[in-house]
Length: 328
Image (cartoon, rainbow, N blue to C red; front, side, top):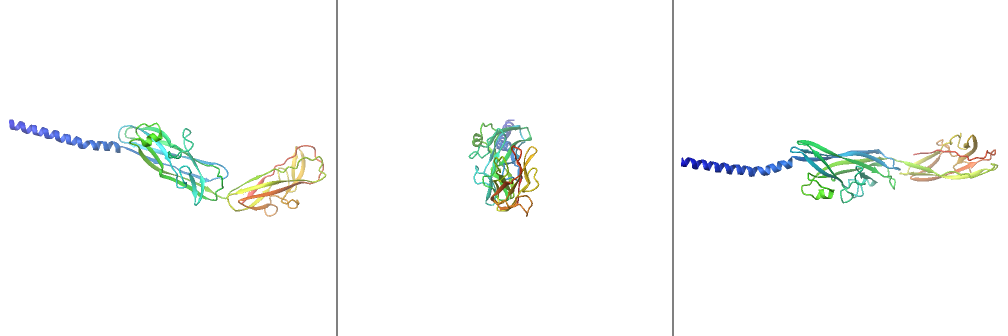
């Protein structure tokens, strides 16, 4: 019995030691499994403006989706979106779309409650802190709205396809399962992880021109026993050195470039617009006959107006509206 008892005690001590060893070995594995149970990813949109109007502001939008999965208990995730320079820019505060050596500035904003522009924390503030809860053994996501704006450029860009790609450190989410009140606090907190993704932006620029014109004001006259003269400028601005054809229509009720009509009710005054001060070259809208020619990127043409002698009109304020068309 004594030998048998001694043997039994030895087995119990061994069993206890083996259990202790198993517990010690199992502890790191359990910790590793808890960490591996959380995984997150970031996906971004492909934003395409198409052909833009270089004389006005253009805007497009999409969503970046931050998705997290857990195979363990439910978790609340806290996240901040960081956007850097992109392949088309020079710095995170000078983001552009590029086509070769030419660039177009862009602005990247998000939801209405977020900063005027989303940055990487050193340029503009990050977007966040946001939070969302993922149920037990499930996936959940948060959608970051992205709005990209191309302001009307200060200098007109030449034609081309302009683009920029944001990936790696230029497009990432800092996240943690511990609550943080600000993005700088979340970035520096222990246990914070980073998920990176990609989003891209592109726009197409084609040859474009804008046109403006001043008014022809003949002033006041009591009788039209002698001709009246006045002039105006037609200005064309383009993004390329291209040939231009500038046409003037016949006005609201006119029948030709020298038979345009200013009206005051049912009353009319005849006038014409010419390409020369001698009033010998009518300016109309028949291409190759009476239109004007110029070459971009900028041109200013003068229209010479003349009211010929005619019967005295009924007193009043006479006006007409002439359309200008630039073909290139």
